[in-house]
Image (tube, rainbow, N blue to C red; front, side):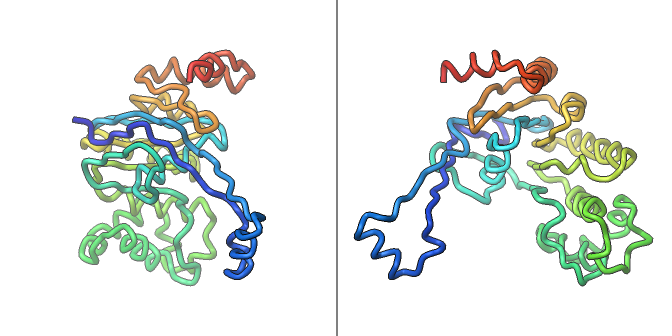
Length: 257
């Protein structure tokens, strides 16, 4: 039985000017028929599954619907249509550099992020030296967080989140932070997590990372599912051709949807 199942999921946003209106103006516009709600489908009919020990790479250009889909998988959003079934605990690293307090130190922010992820104080006391070493921020431990670069903040967030063994781990562009040495260390940590039995989802613009790490691939384009396959190399080759201007494969797929 798959640890994660996404069955025919569609996600709709409603847009309009209600946020800029007071209640009186909103009611008057509704009465006069001057207020219109527009609908936008970020994802349409997405279906895939993931087993323990597998790593899914999600690829697609900006606006493909990747981040919205991750919010559904992580439980932040509910799908408009379809179902998302999770059989285990989820750890999601979305927008890594956000959620910190610039006035607090590196150590204080590490504990803050740990609390946000549900870690106990005892767990953080045990793991903090390991977190500090992995993030390579020992010399910055007592500095105000606002003095750190965005890459350093992301390294700390990744280090805190990777200290546990979740059943499902979601990573949104987190392996692109830091220098080449840290990226290699992050990838090694990902292999360790995968080998421990976690199901992992990676969103990355680096096809090299997807090729090297993933066992399955999901290709989205403008909210539509182009491919879901375990032929990672083949899908990456087709996606690279698409990036180079060859739209024939995408057009053939969308023509039958």
